Amino acid sequence: MSVRRVRRRDRKGAAAEYWMIDVFVEHPDGRRERIRKVAPVQTKRDAERYERELRREMLLGVRAADDNREEVKPKETPTFAAFVKTFEETYVKTNNKPSEAETKKSIFKKHLVPAFGKLKLDQIGSREIEAYKAKKLDKKLSAKTVNNHLTVLRRTLAVAQEWGDLAVIPPVKWLKAPEPEFDFLTFEEADRLVEAAEPDWRPMILVGLKCGLRQGEILALRTDDTDLVVGRIMVRRSVTRGIVTTPKSGKSREIPLGDTVLRALKGCRHLKGELVFCDERGAMLSKGECKHPLWRACKRAGLRRIGWHVLRHTFASHLAMRGVPLKAIQELMGHATIEMTMRYAHLSPDVRRDAVRTLDEPAATSNGNLMATKAAQGQN
Image (tube, rainbow, N blue to C red; front, side):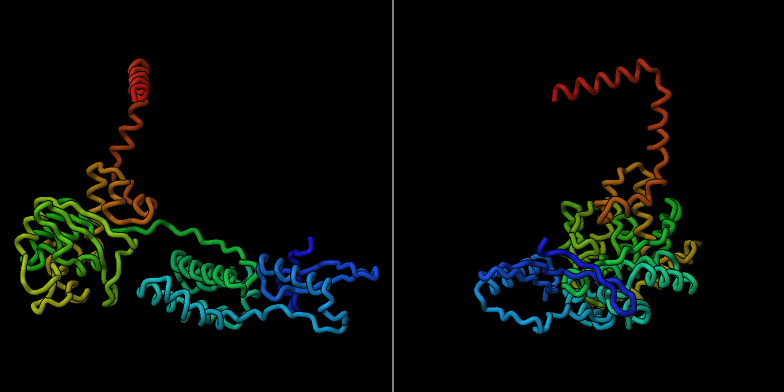
């Protein structure tokens, strides 16, 4: 191969890989010259293009046959800290929502840059990553938190490779993290909460309980997102840290309204502004303003103090307990993957129990059901 990958080690013993040009050129006088160069741009396509240019120069006699000519040096690998600065200003800014960008910047500033900042990108290997994991676990960070850091680190190194600043991405092994626990209200507790809620706040609590909207989605809900004739809500936007963007999944979704929520929304219509839930001036409520009314309702209902996200968990939990398919719950919740919805699967034991009970049916009944299924498929 005239263009190939070469693995070398620097003075410190760190491994690095380069695209290398290694070709022989036949001169008219019979001389045979070998050219070995590191490609100035470290991608396979650019290395092949450079190899063709070298061949053409030799054949045309443009390139001087000077053994002392300075060899092209490989591209200098930036430090992690230097690359992160460019990464934040370009990739993070353009490919993440403001809230996600702030989270990544915080992880860089507090954790990743202090740990890897002085190292060059190609000096970050499996050993350094494993040492980072051990150090963070020693500081009592949860496995899930450390995995979040590793996800940001892995994405940063992947982009560095895409941009030609890193040849090989080191393997990253995520920690085994237990499934996060979540709280939800029973059917009876949910009814008590609604009854105890202050009239001005009851419709908002009902939207959380009966529609499963995130708090940011509730706060950003506008009048034109609600169709009280058909009976539905279109979740098109959310607010995080005062910035209104699309919902977390990046997609809008439709939520049908039950009679209880529909009556509550019809009863709280106003002319203060475009928001369904707002303050006296028609301005958007803050999460801090919504916290205490919910806590007051919990206290009057004799319940533990909960946050608004528990209402969302309650919505999904009640659907699962009523036997609603997980795929439908995923769509109503706006989950990007079914794995996120599977946390509620254990709340629908009747489905699994009924499935296993089919094994107790007489063989004749099972065969009859099988034949009927095949016949129906044949007709289709």
